[in-house]
Length: 401
Ligand SMILES: Cc1cc2nc3c(=O)[nH]c(=O)nc-3n(C[C@H](O)[C@H](O)[C@H](O)COP(=O)(O)OP(=O)(O)OC[C@H]3O[C@@H](n4cnc5c(N)ncnc54)[C@H](O)[C@@H]3O)c2cc1C
Image 1: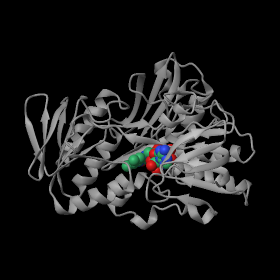
Image 2 (image 1 turned 90 degrees about the horizontal axis):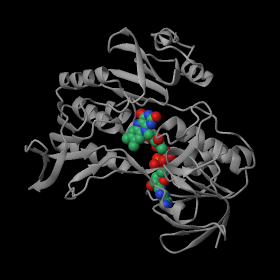
Image 3 (image 1 turned 180 degrees about the vertical axis):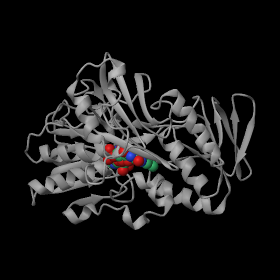
């Protein structure tokens, strides 16, 4: 049995960032990375954006983690951890020892019941390769879900000239984060690009009809498509941690140093549930900045540093010509004060609770993430009318971002 000084379960962006951070502290220590995928770590965001727009090619997404002198175990799931023996077991029954362990297992796409095996889920580079090929061969696509992935995939397919129909139960696209007026405005923006938006509709059944896929909606209608893609969020991969006796809640619970309830075992990325001091609540953050930064902090701490993870992560997305960045807790259930420069086109959203700004949405406003972070971090109390103007409603001049 080989014992690694650092063993990482998961082959995503958090894993790669951890490897790089370990190497900047420890040039020699052995590192083993185990991933279920048959590829090493790569950037996921381009799978629904840059690769479709032609800004990037597939060759651009790889992180080339093996250049850091790691044993990269591809297509190798870790099925169990025995903290008492400092050992993990893989799906071939082999054991591997560790001194420090990182669980960066991310999440798996949430699936719909009884999908007849006819629904594509979108998470990996192989999913991208499959959908890219299908989009060159077929014409009509159903997209289930109006959230982050559903809206990006619908926009990508529509921009390629495909007939796209979105189906989701909310009133508007991105309703979980955008205030109602902006969310409904987005329905119109998608419709202008030829997307059929079936808002307020639940999918009740999926069936195959020859080489077509038929979605039945809750209004009794049937919608045939050449292919159907679902974007329903992810379920964090916590089962193995839980079986090992690690404290698990909404994700793998970590302390300020990203260490789990079992010393020597760390967690980072989409799967980790951490408490940010500015927001003071346990949270998971399913976005790139968090994957990269928490992966880095976990790697440094595994290699002997003691760095707190106090970073308030941000995320971003593009939808046709619109783009946004957001920081902190941008749940539309909070009290949202919008400060528009131009209604629905350019402005800032302040997400407030008990007079404190918990999150900021920068809608078509770029280079203001640090200002948003410092307002949230200040934990000052504001009257709703007073938040307007805290951040300029226009992008920062180049170089100030
Ligand atoms: C299509 C797409 C577009 C996105 N766009 C954006 C964006 O625009 N902006 C943004 O901020 N974020 C975006 N994200 C989110 C961002 O990509 C994720 O937050 C990030 O990839 C999470 O990284 P991670 O390493 O924590 O987890 P993951 O990327 O999920 O990686 C986890 C890895 O662990 C492996 N694994 C799990 N369990 C095991 C096991 N038991 N044994 C071995 N391997 C295992 C998995 O196979 C996977 O390879 C996007 C995500 C997707 C899917």
